[in-house]
Length: 168
Image 1 (cartoon, rainbow, N blue to C red):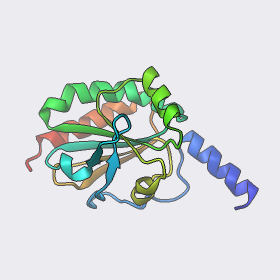
Image 2: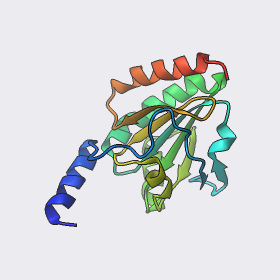
Image 3: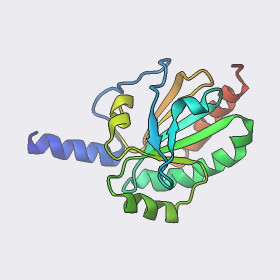
Image 4: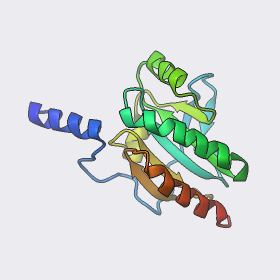
């Protein structure tokens, strides 16, 4: 890879821009995965959340927008977890300690899984941090969100609320 492309890609990722389209598109079934929980190593799969509206968030400890998103996502989760809402955050750090350090500063009660090799991030077409997929009760991707700013949470809440009201 040439140096200019590598630098441009790094800058684009740091700023939350994508250089190409997502591999996974709206109205497609979300790919099934099985990943270990960050804290316990217990395996979780996407299918165990079937029937719920899922906010699937790919994140990393070095991601500046993730510092903004985590407290807001925790509030969203707390407000909706008893209404059929699941929030699953997939950490991309190779260094487990970096992820744990982040979580000490930005605690979360939702499920945190680990994809240190990036296999599932590749399958989902993740190119920026964070990238989120809102999946309906039937397992269909209904919204894809790249990057995160504080004002984004209002639109995310509207989408989640709408999907929670839909029948299975």
